[in-house]
Image 1 (spheres, rainbow, N blue to C red):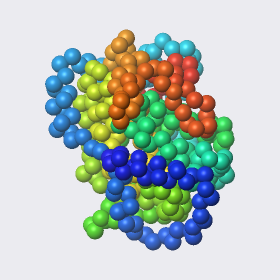
Image 2 (tube, rainbow, N blue to C red):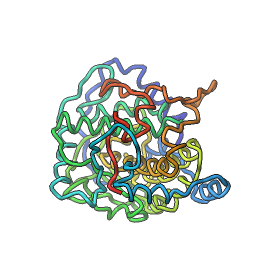
Image 3 (cartoon, rainbow, N blue to C red):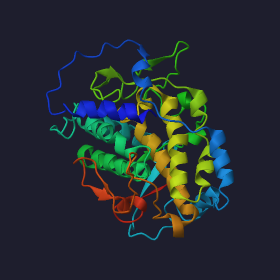
Length: 370
C-alpha cells in the first residue's frame, strides 16, 4: 500500500473539501475499466512465506485452533466472554443466511444508496447516505491503516454500518460475514457474487482491465468518491485475480493468529488475508481509501474481524483487551492505548478502543455463528 501517495492525495483533496464539488456528467458504462487510476492506491502485501516464517519464530504462541474450538463449544466465537451483553445478535456466514434475509440485506444497502447524504463538510464528495460511510473511510485512511488501531477502528466501523442499516433502513435480519477461506482461489464463483445479490465478480482480463458490474442489486451504480483521495464519477468495477484470492486461506489465518502479541498478529492480518482479499477482488476494492464503495467491503471486513475474535479467544485472559503498537506512522510515534478515541465523523457517536475490544462487552453485543 503506497500510503504516502494516498495521504498526499487525501490531504490535497480535503484542503478544498469545503468548496462546492463540480458536477460531472454521468459515467458512460463501458464494459471494461482501465485499472491504472487504482494502481497507486493498492494494499501492501505480506508474502505467505514470510508470514509462516514469522509464526514459526514466535515460540510463545497459543494455537489459533484452540480459540475456534473453544468458541464452538460455547455457542459462538464470542460465547466464552463474560461481558455485559446478554442477548447477542449472531452474525451468520453468507451461506447460512436464508434467501429472505439475503434479499432483505441487499435491499437495505440499496436503501442507503438511495437516501440523500447528510451533507456538510463531514462527508465531502458524498452523494448519498451510503457514500457518507465511504467518505469517512477515505478521509481517515492515513490514521486507520498500517497502525495499531486498524482492527479496532474497522470493528467500530462495521458496527456503525450495522446501526445505519437497522436504524435508517429498517433491516431486521442477521448481519452477514463471508468465510473467504472457503472461496480462496475462486472468489469469482463465491455465493454472494450472483445476479440475485452483489452482482458478478469478473476476473481481470488478459490485458489487465477490470469490468463494470452490470448485474445484481448494485447494477449500474455510479460511485463519486475515489480513486484515492479524488472525487471522480466511476462505475462499481471488479477485476478478480485468483492468484491473490488464493491467499485468503485458513493456513494464512493460522499463521497470523499464531502470534502471541497483538501487534504481530495485527500486522500479519492487515497485510495478509485482509490485503489479499482487497487486491484479489481488485478495481474499487483494491483502492485503500475508497474501497467501501464496493458493498462487498463490509462482508470482507467481517471476515477480518472474525479472525481477530478467534485470536482473542485463543487466550482470553491475556488477549481480550490486549493492545500494543503505535497509533501514528510518523515520528514522534505515539503508543496506542485503550483510551484512544475512534471516530466516524458524526455518523454515530465516538467511542474508545476499550469499548470495542469485547464483542460481548456491552457497547458491542454480537457473536459469529462459528
